[in-house]
Length: 75
Image (tube, rainbow, N blue to C red; front, side):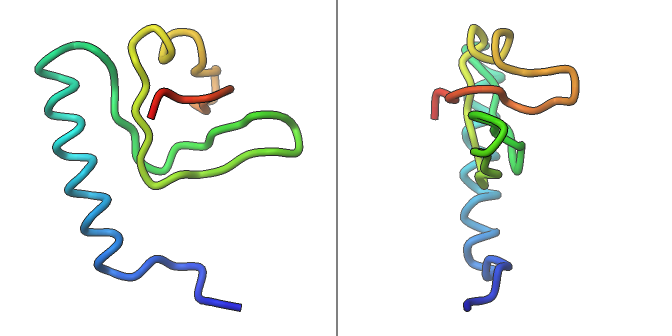
């Protein structure tokens, strides 16, 4: 079984991608970028992706009271 922690290079790539995506999102107002947010598809199917992007429409519809994404994100 491999190490569950991502290597430093992966963290740097994800951080850079998030920074660019968040800057674009803020400039356009089209959505929001998130890092390490829980995405829950059902009670037995959930993931924590490195980076997700949600359109404003999806953000409003899918974020629950605990701050999790409940459903399929945009990116």
